[in-house]
Length: 243
Ligand SMILES: [Zn+2]
Image 1: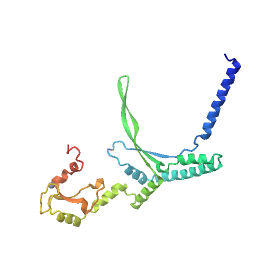
Image 2: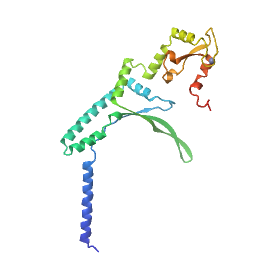
Image 3: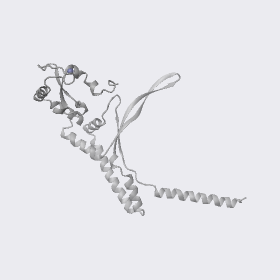
């Protein structure tokens, strides 16, 4: 059976080893933490939110300056890291840690949240309360946001880019293009085959809807009667009609 002196010495050695391990861990762990930028956008009540529209609105609202400011601070942070690496005795090791933590591709992060109503009971009385849940994130580079900003600047920050280009697609539908498609399709509905030589009751239809990225080009246009055009949404998304 070991005497008290021996037990004390063993404990001391274990303690010293533990301290040494902590010091080694502190020395070798990465001192670099990439400075991400976060922004929360509440999309409660929106059924099919387009994240890029919200980012455009964020820029239209004049908030790009915070992106710009953060971009400058990322540059300053990188500079500080380089000075730190240069001073370090573990130069190569620190440099590889630094390279590993760099993440410019995801530097800017938009978090989309929805408010949800929850309930709890207190003394048999129902109480509603709201919680905010992150339902999506959009990660991008500074360059992406800068490019977005330049495109918005070019259209005088009028509206989100998607809406702007949709509007312009509709503007491209001129009277002469309309007549050309009518003649090409011989005043005949291209869905049901109904022939209406006077053209009344016929419409020019985008085969791929503008809202889904369809363009106002001859190959994406066809003549339909108003009845078929009215059913068109079912035809474009036919999943439950085909069953
Ligand atoms: Zn028809």
